[in-house]
Structures are given as C-alpha cells and as structure tokens.
Amino acid sequence: KLEASQPESEKKTPSSVLMQMVMGRLYHEQEKYKQAAKRFLHVLDALENADDFGLKPEMRGVLLGDAAESYVIFGESFLGAGMIDKAQEAFRTAHEVDRDKNAQAFHQARILLAQDKAKQAREELKKYFDAKADGQGAKPYELLEEVLTKLGKKDELTSQLAEIQAGDQDNLPLAHFLAEHYQQEGQTAKAVP
Image 1 (cartoon, rainbow, N blue to C red):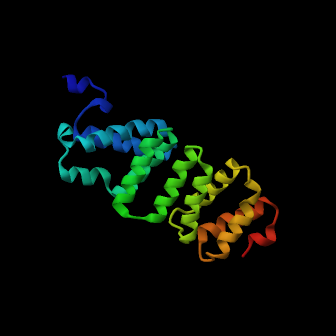
Image 2: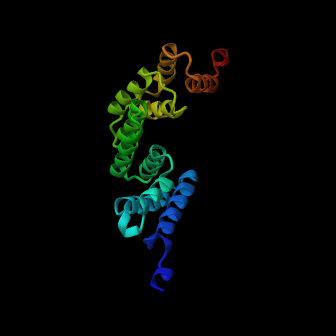
Image 3: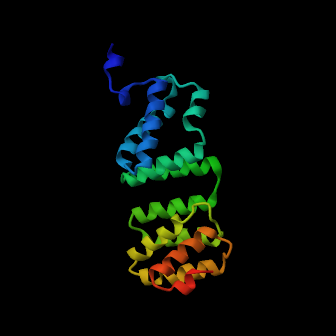
C-alpha cells in the first residue's frame, strides 16, 4: 500500500525508473530542463544503485538505448537546469561510451561558457572546427556566436564563420548557418553559394 501511495518519482521499481526516463525525455524535448533534470537524477540514482531498484542488466540497456545519446541528453538537461557539475559528468560519460573527441570538445565548450570561461570555450570550439566536424549540426556555430557575444566580439562572427568555411567547404550545417547569417546582414549575394 505504501508503494502505491508514493509518487512515481519516489518509487524504486524498474517501471518507475522507465517512467522517469520517458518523462525526462519529454521534458527535455520541451526544453523544460529543470523538470527533465529532476527525472534524470532519479534515473541515474537507479543506474548507480541497480539492486535497490530491481534493475537487471538487460533493463539497463532498454532504459538507456543508445547510451551515449542518453548521457548527452542528461548533460543538456543538467546544463539547462544550471547543474554544471552534473552536466560535465554526463557529457564525460557520453564520451567514455562513444569516444567522439569532436563532440567532447563541443560539450566542453558549452560547459566552459556556462562557467563564464568564454575564452577557454572558444579554444574548445576551435578543436571542433579544426577537425572539420559536422556531427553537432549548427549548434557549434550558435555557440560560437554566444561565445563571441560574451567576449564583446560579436562583430567578428561573420569573418570567423567565413574563415572556418574556407577550410571546410563540404560542411553543410556551417554553409547553411553562414548563409542565414549573410541574409540577416543583408548580404544576399554571399548567402547563395
């Protein structure tokens, strides 16, 4: 009876953990990061204390699915909720699973910017750009804009994007982002490759 009267977030059952994971993902998709983070903390507690929650090894696989992707979602939610240490831990775990150095540099740049270390964030982004990566879509270029704004150098964005593109002409997310930026500046002739 006590178990039935407890809120789902306090239950220590495999089904409650699965429900928290689903709810966390839904909140994440809606950019309600504080609510998502709360759910994901419950999931991480269950993963770390599997016996207490009755989680068998096969349930862990079902729960996480693509483990690296799940930990990135955890990290994004924690970062959005202002839980920087938890975000860094989740991103680190994602990197341990998939060993994507480019994604690691991007996520580290996000952490550094959240810690008001814009200069270091810019250095991490440079690693991503130098690798000619495109796996994060337009997010690194949006982050570059945030970093430059924080550094008081937003006026350098167009030239930096153009410089990055000169060395990475096959990068479609970059080309699209730069074209949109040119259009916003009224430079429509440059917006079309």
